[in-house]
Length: 317
Length: 113
Image (cartoon, rainbow over all chains, first blue to last red; front, side):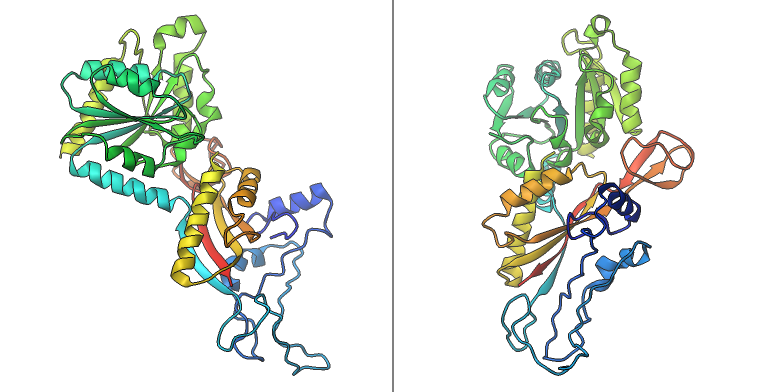
């Protein structure tokens, strides 16, 4: 690991070497003198009981020049037995206390969000609710698709959580159909997270066996990483957006279980190749299901309703 | 993509750990970030500066270990290492790869005082 810019280390040796070549800063880029994390307990013990193996093992295999800068707790110079206190990271000495400690965390960075998501998932499972997280870029037709879906579902109990940065426009459109909807405005936030959905669920009447639609903030990037407790992410892509979008924003399509290719009624006017759309989606995610739909004309909507019904049936079991 | 939220998650984890383990200063944070995690390194560094300011990890050295991407190839059935989601299989040239690793983001450990 380079101490100047943080490059290299840990099985990226080749990149590290490239980087040195490119920057021509060999002298400036030194391997870090990997800190001795556990200071000696007494004035003279060999301070080599550091967390060396874990972080350092991979580097030891590398063949780039790598001066090991371990400070041993004893020097063999003139004053081999001199005692120097207070030079550790804490700047002081407390008998029996090490100066620096290593706290093993080994936790997923998104674990907090995942805890909320797991709670949501458990709460929804208890009531056999099938939840979808609708993700797409702004303007792909998520809300129109939902309005049409709600009309087609008739008496099926359902509710909608609408995520946007601002306005209650979408929730108003959903409520106009008679369905229950809660708007979550994220302010500056670019995605919904597990905690927001938990809060929204507390305000939504959801009977046993209902469908829950979570319409995420229109954003083809960030919502991919945040589990909300849904059963499936549904990525919606309209034919006006361009066939290469799945390749440009692969994370979202990789995370989705179903892709809806929407506005197919516009395909003749957009010079697009629907097969190429589908091929690119599958290139990113070989497992994904793809449906061609026009929420406006109703084309393909029956297949989408069937897909929702199958999901609901799986949850009922 | 959402580096601010990620670093806020790290700050929360650090604060929880501080309560549990009784430390008052973090001098080093070590993370493992997969190559396919969708996290931009420069944006992450920026977020660290902003989000950790005023916390007990302000000024801490942040070390990031790179985790290679791993995928199973549908065509040749092998498990291969990849750098990007859209890489082709380095063994057989197949395009149908199912990502199996390298999208994780983990806090490995903290060096604390």
